[in-house]
Length: 362
Image (cartoon, rainbow, N blue to C red; front, side):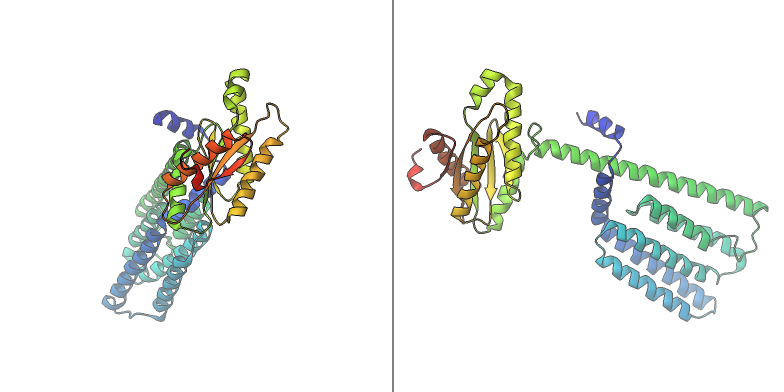
């Protein structure tokens, strides 16, 4: 099953909305890692700057102080950044600043050593950027900035047509190609895994027929609402009246269509509340923030909405409504709602009944 889904996902072209959701999800998951990379980058640069400044008898200049302050400011801004597209820009600013700072340090070493250190600096930057949650345009901009500012042929005695220069140029091309390919493949694999995870979660928590949450999803979300203990909580259980007769008379295809239509009414009318198909022709709604009158109005309006549906094979619904008090478990609320539903079914159908203690024996 997993391999079948994986093969299907790999054949799909991810829509723009999914790619945007993936980028935001990845950034949120890796934001602390990004902060760590920024901090480590500053620390490594500072150590080398101090080594070159003092062992090279050049002193720690005001330029180093400016770069250090700028890098620290960008890192602080990252701590408040919450959107992935903002990080794309922020990362480019950080790359531009730190590569300029690296150029400052490397220009302080003997000229014969500069090309190697410049290429090493580019290699480090490109590898780091390739594992960060940035978009393709941001990655390739970072690559361009790195090669321009850490150009091993600028302010050195290296010539591109000489042996050492030609070898270095070939290495630069190989390095850029390898890092680009690795970045693109890793991003594609992450996107496919994200898409596959969404597909599997939807299959686990979304009812395939009606495309609303299923029982598993409802139980998890309703339990969470119970723990929050917000005032005005009610649980409603819904059953389609005479649904078996619809199936027997018209067939299961029509029965499925009726289920989808009722589910669509519930989804449209109960926006903002937890809804689910519990199984068969049973649905559930978990209300919060309503008083008794408000909850009764909601379920009565839903009964009327389904009753007034002008589509083919019209049906009605019965609803059992139960108040959820502080300390009640979800099982207790479901039992009470089921008792109220039983009463609605046996008192004429096409109605909503609120649970009271007189229904305890049902």
